[in-house]
Amino acid sequence: MSRTNLAATLLLLAALPSLAQKAPAPDAEKTAAPIPSETKSETSHTLQLDGKTIAYTATAGTLLINGDDEKPNGSMFYVAYTLNGASDMRTRPVTFLYNGGPGSASLWLHMASVGPVRVLTASPEATGAAPYRIVPNEYSLLDKTDLVFVDAMGTGFSRVVGKATMKDFAGTDQDARAFSKFIQRFLTVNRRWNSPKFLFGESYGTTRSAALVDVLEAGGVSCNGVILMSTILNFHAVAPGNDAWFIGNLPSYAAIAWHFEKAPHKGRDMKTFLNEARAFARGPYAEALAQGHNLPAAQADAIAAKMASLTGLSVQYLKEANLRVNPSRFRKELLRNQRAILGRYDARFEGTDYDAAGENPGYDPSSTGITGAVVSALHEYLDRELKYNTKESYYPRAPGLSGPASWDFSHRPGGAGGPAMRETDVVEDLADAMRKNPRLRIFSANGLFDLATPFFNTEYDLAHMQLEPKLRGNIEFGYYASGHMIYLNVDALKQLKADLSGFYQRAAGNGGT
Image (cartoon, rainbow, N blue to C red):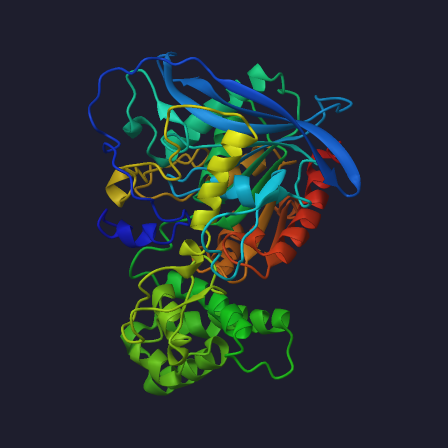
């Protein structure tokens, strides 16, 4: 796949759109930057969880990581939350969390998911303008694990230093090495080498996690668990012209049609309905698409009729689209007669377009509906609560990482032993880590209304790791009536907390307290 075609692939990544910022391109020439000192601001807090008051320390700061010459080439920003008074820090889990993009800071997970505070949104409605409310998070994971939110290089307050440029970090393998160095530096500085270790990534953060866990394993850092939220592991599968993309999207279309009551239920519950959509997608639908333009007309009519009953789209529209409807078209078409468009990250979000014509939405209401709240809340929180003051600008998204040419998607799997890939596929990396560390557990969290990283694609990838039967039980799945950012639905966040509490118990073996 060419770099030009990869632009379409990047549209499937789930970092929120870049905010307008002027900055040099990631490979711009520069003189050696001064090596800054590591920074740290510690504050004390309390939180009510499950009827108990817990005390914790928040640490916002930076750690330096070294390049291949053992000289600092990066300063990475993080916010860590550590439970006070734990009986034995050596047995208390520590989790490293990050968003995706590539090129997104960790503010989305930090300010809206399992940290000790969260910003209130009107999801799935647009939240609107300030003021916003930042409240204690009763669904935080802090009672199960210490939490370390990490900003990828070039995002947040993370910066290249010394003679490095963003080109040294802007790639699948380069990024995984940088995070590996940060994690090892954090474990050393905080004397946490013997703690159970977890990775928690969202969107491209799942790509990072799959590569990173194998890099860590090769370096002698064995992880207990990996949490994959809204997953993309294989970029080959979403290349233009690949029918696997359309097959993987179909069950998500069915879930969304169910939500908007556009598909006939006939007394079936949603689980049964989605299982029917899965079976059709992997069976008759996949077989029909495999025939290309040689598909007999009668069979095409039958497939279109079945698709219509699952997706809520008309038979005529499906036939005109040659049975292949991409997410952008689906978002425009499903509620066209209501003059409404749907969100990409979360199709429950509705919006209005310039007009009801055309085939693609003019924007993503699930992005614009929450971005202002999360960005504003992060700035307010860092300043007033965490007392972290700096002259640097906080970048929600790395300036310059705005297209396929700015990220190196080539990849050499850690355990595959084969040639380097032109486009990233980290399924083998995750499988390699599980084979070498047979106690490693995986939790896959999936939003049913997510059109950025559809759940059926994730199921397919995790089913193609070629694991022996005794390892397959180490992979768990959770499904939520939410979108890409599962935690924006408070009911889904509550369910997620319960699911992950059990996962930590099984993976760490001590309940985390």
